[in-house]
Image (tube, rainbow, N blue to C red; front, side, top):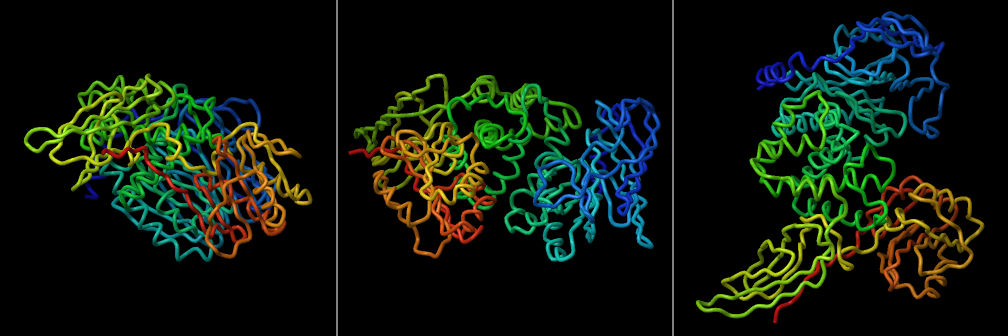
Length: 603
C-alpha cells in the first residue's frame, strides 16, 4: 500500500503542477533581538517586502511585531517572548503561485509548510529545510517551545508540535490524522503532500495551510475537535490547498470540505447524528433574513454567521442532495475525476458541474441551475392525503402538496406510515398516486430532512441564531447597572447593530436581558410562554422563543456581573441551540428544542 501511494502521487502530479516562481530562502530567528535575518533568491524578479525594489536576490532584516498578550490577538501575525507566527509579509512578494526551499534556524523548533530535510537540533539551535514543490501562495513561519512527536503513514510524515503538558494528546491526534488521510485517499485519491503537521498556537487560531494546521492549544484539548475540525483541516489539502477555487465565481471548497469531513464523520457515527446535522443546517437557513439569502456562487470567504449559512451549510447540503441524486458510486467517481483533472489548478462551479455530468452520464444542468446559480429554497404547505381500498387487497394513496415557490422542481420525500411498516416514497410537488399493499395511516413530509427547503413553523423551533442574524433588534435591559457587560456580550454575538430601548415593543425582534429578580416580571407582563428547564444550579440561562405572531426573541438571565461576563466567549458558538444553561463559561445543558414534521393522518 505504501509503494502504491507513492507511485500514484508521482503519476498524478507531473510537471504541470510546477508554479511560476521558485524561491530559495534562508532565515535565522533571533528571539533576543526580535529580528528575522532573511536572504532570498528567485528565478524571476520579486518585490522586496519592505520597499518597492524588484530583484532576484535580497538580503535584509525584519523586525518582529511587538509582543502581544494572547487574549488581545485579533488575527494576523503574533509574537510574544516564546512564540512566533508570521503568515505573510516577511518574504519577497509576487502575485504568482510559488514553490520554495526554505532553511530555518532558531534557538527552538521552527517550521513552515513543505517536506522536511536536513533537520538538526544541537547546542540550543534548531535548523531544518522545508521544500514546497506544489504551487502555493503562502509561506508561513511558526516557532515555539514545541515538543515534537511523529508517526509515519507510508511516505507521509505526521507530526504534532505541542507545548509541554500536551504530550498525552499527541498519539491520539496522530492516529486520527492517519485515519482521516486513509479515508480521504480512498474517497478522492492519494494525499497530495509528504506531511501533515498539527501545530499548537498560543492564540485562539484555527488555520489550514498546505500540509499543516495551526490551532489554538486550548482548542486542541477539547475532545470533539478530533471528530470535527481536524478532519476539516486535513481535507482542505485536497479542496482549497490542492484544487484552488475560482473565487471570482464562488468558493465551493468550504462547503465541499464541510460535507466530506464534518457531515460524513457524523454519518459514519450514526444516522441520528447525520439527520441532526441536516436539521441544524435547515434551522440556520430558517434564521437567515431574506435579504441575506444569495446564490452560493456569491460566497468567497466567511465574514459572519450569515455567510457561513450559505457558503458552508447550504453548499454541503447541495452536495448531499447531489450524492442522493446520482448515487454513491458515481458521486465518488466524480470527485476522483475532479481531483485528477484539477489538482493544483483553479476550478470553478462550472468545472464541478461539467465533471459530475460527464462522469455520471447524467444531465445535471437543472440541478446546478436551481441549487448553485439560483437562490432561495422551496417551501411547502397544505399537505393532504387520502386513501381508498382497491381490488386484490390493495390501497390507493393520493397525496397533494402545495409549493409556495414554484421556481423549484424537486422530488419530495414522503414518509408513509401503514398498519405494519414505515417507508419512504418520492412525490411531485402537486398530486401523486401510489398503490400500496397495506392501509396507510399517516403521511409526513421529509421528516428526515433530506431536501434543502424552508422549514415549516413547527419544524423550526426558535434558536439563538434567529436573533443573532436578525436586523433591527431591540435590546431591553432590566438591570442598567450591568449595561457595559450586556453591551459587550451583544456586540460579540450579533451579526448587526442592536438598538437599546427603554420601552419594549414585542412586535419586532428583541433581546430581554437581566438578573433573575428583575427579568421574570417582564416576561409575565409580555405574556411570553413559560419555559421548562431542568432543575440544576446555574449562573446564567439563555433561551430563544417566538411570540404568538412568530416574532423571534432571546432571553438572557444571569446571577451577577461576573456570570454575565463569562458568557462573552462561549455564547456566540451556540447559535443552533434553543436553550443553553451555564455554570460560569461552561455550558452544562443545551437543547435544540422540539421539531415536529409536517404530517397528516389518514382516516
